[in-house]
Amino acid sequence: MNPEPPPLQVRGALRSFGHTRAVDGVDLELHPGELLVLVGPSGCGKSTLLRSIAGLVALDEGSITVGGLVVDDGRSSTPPEHRPVGMVFQDHSLFPHLTIEDNVAFGIRKTPAAERKAAVAELLAMVEIEHLAQRYPHEISGGERQRASVARAVAPHPRLLLLDEPFAALDPNLREQVRTQLVTLLRATGTPAVFVSHDQAEAMALGDRVAVMRAGRLEQLGTGPEVYDHPANRFVAAFMGDAAFLPVSDEDGRLRTELGPIERPADAPTLPAGGVVAVIRPADVELEADPDGPDEIVGSVYQGPTWTYDVRLASGAVVRSTRPRSEAVSHGTRVRARLDIACPALVPIAAG
Ligand code: ADP
Image (cartoon, rainbow, N blue to C red):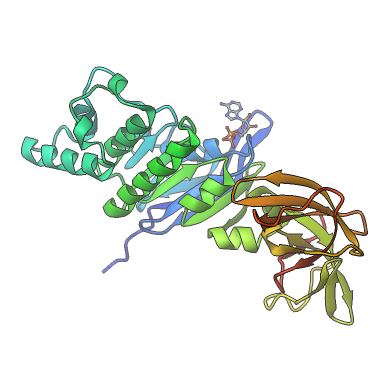
């Protein structure tokens, strides 16, 4: 028996607009049922990559295969309507003159009526809008419309679903709820999906893996913990979350930063030539009150559950420390900062 072909394979994808290489040699492959999130700063090529998978943009070079079917080989590109791919946009795209039920049924209108009705009811129930089946899009909220859009896109059993910033128009409280419902729907139907997001926290919450892009290139592809805790370089470390970078000295094999000794990573017996810096995450820095301490609180932000402090070290470097809200410390307080992990990530000194 042949193994199931991957839902998506992208090989050497290249697409330029004038002198801009929007997608510059991207390779990636999705596992069955996997949810992948493309993240990166504005203009890094996320939408162009997603649109080329959808068939809205043709590749200049490389290939895209969906469920074993070549849809772009760099010379010819299958039009979107002939690709086994569903797409959901930021601003939903329901037909205003059809009820929610009829919108969801639209993509499966050739299915026998009884079967169609049952499938639509099941999808609406999965995203918890079955009670809105007879309403029109303008009669329901933004979050409900977005759930209906995804139910509609999933109805014809696409081999792959593409979602371009699907939560961007929703307010933050609603966003998490809608996200959870969509993930439940995608998991229950086994639909693999590629999301675009510019929000790294959302990417880690949503994706089985996260693809971090910069200037058309894939900088790193991995699970949330892989890209957050083991970033490939400074760019990925800084993009995935608050990070300070401290010099690392190597004296007879013993590594240290200004915050004390650190362990050598098990997977890096020799450090890259040119040197490394340690990635310091705020959650990994502890503060000890010490009137004679070498470090000083120079800034603070209250976040409800936690405080985040800016701490100036003796060298002048500033690191951040996230502390429980019970640990309020005022500006100018002398402290001793230390790392509460033995082995912070190390990345090459060179920016990039
Ligand atoms: P992102 O989605 O990460 O913000 P895009 O894929 O939209 O990035 O854009 C990547 C680069 O390609 C940007 O420099 C953008 O200006 C350029 N670009 C995208 N689409 C077009 C287009 N249709 N015409 C010209 N340039 C484009």
